[in-house]
Length: 79
Image (cartoon, rainbow, N blue to C red):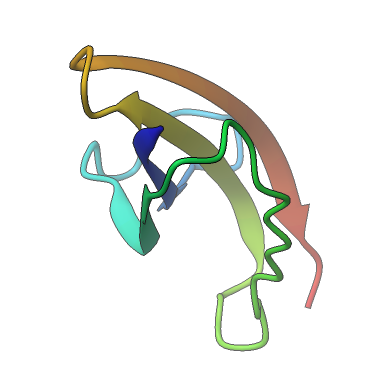
């Protein structure tokens, strides 16, 4: 199983609009092994992220099939 996982962030306006359409890559991880699965634990340090609304998304790419799936969520940093 060969895959790549990318975690990304971008800031939003207070009404939920996109301030900057570019995603900031927070972390990319590439897995090249013979196992079908692997637990991945990830903490994102938000202490330097300004307060406000943010989009987060995770992209998982199957490197052999060259297919990507994504999931995302909006969250608020309070302080």
